[in-house]
Amino acid sequence: MKNIDDNPNAKPKPATKEENYLKGRGAQINTQNRFLKTTRAKEHIEAIDDWTEENEHTVYLEDHAKSIVNKVDSPDVGMWYSMNPYQGCEHGCIYCYARNAHEYWGYSAGLDFERKIIVKKNAAELLRKFLMHPKWECKPISLSGNTDCYQPAEKKFRLTRSLLEVCNEFNQPVGMITKNAGMLRDKDLLQEMAKKKLISILVSITTFNEDLRRVMEPRTTTATQRLRIIQELSEAGVRMGVMLGPMIPGLNEHEMQRIMKEASENGATFSAYTFIRLNGAIKIMFHDWLYKNFPDRADKVWHLIETGHGGKVNDSRYGVRMRGEGPISDLVRQQFIKYNKLYNLNAERWELDCSQFRRPGEQGSLF
Image (cartoon, rainbow, N blue to C red; front, side, top):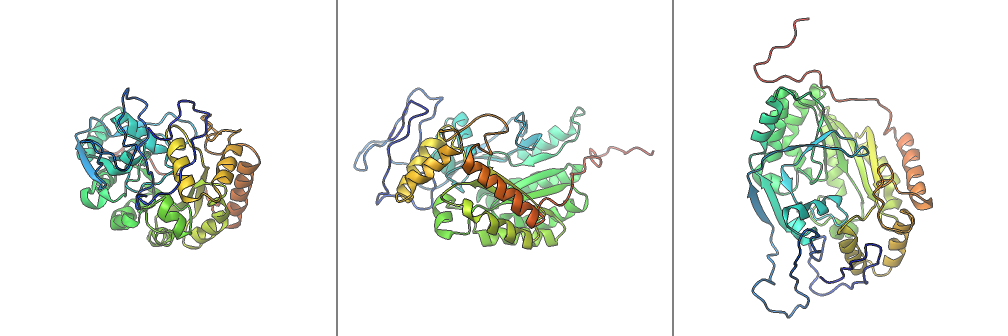
């Protein structure tokens, strides 16, 4: 594969933006799947082979899944369980940590992740079966943990809607995160769940710079539209927060104050953030993307990311990996704390209500 080095600490070679740059896609390459012994790649634009031409359009691959709810063992992600109606994400965010998970399905974390979307058509059926199990002791479930549950596929398949309907029926609390205004299609259902304290939502906002968003998160909605999600749902009584993730020094970390201020003004009451980390194959494709799109500052940005992770671009230690260490990441953290207080984004103590959980036909206690 082009620009792939077997040494995990080695820096990939700089790339340049070419005429055949794939607009509307985050990744520009298919990185090698670490689970596959062999790989095929088109090294030159003029190459001709039966297998070299990739379908540039998004392909939906319907899957009859065996399970939908997964226990989350990582102690620093703030969730107990997660469920993902889709695998892969057409939003194409170049920094997305979930890209690496696409390799478990036999695909690349690069272009495959945003062009080959796995659709779990039986998601609602599986969730109902899971919640009906007598051993399930209600805890909040996050939707989604690995991809955006309101990515473009949701408009066609409505799997997220079907999962929410099951959760509302069982009074199963749900935490959600998205960067897609398609969430507003389910405003009625979210409002109903909010009345029972069954829903809490984070809207991810990374930049107000449209030129940056179009290449970094090519198929997402604008920051203005994301503020609209916060505003409309908060006015409907839904607990809304803002996720600033990831903050990338030299690209978007200077926007932290504006993002938090405008989110607060539109109804957000809590917040979270992450510092950029480039784990697994993301290191290769992010480097390729960075030097193609920002050659004037690529070296500086790459070095700043390294400064936040002890000379590397990733740190896998729990509690440190998403916050970073060193003066750059400390500065981001101090800004977050300051603006969190200034804009009242950490003012409330609030928990989803698990006490109302009931299986259909199940009678509650009389005392």
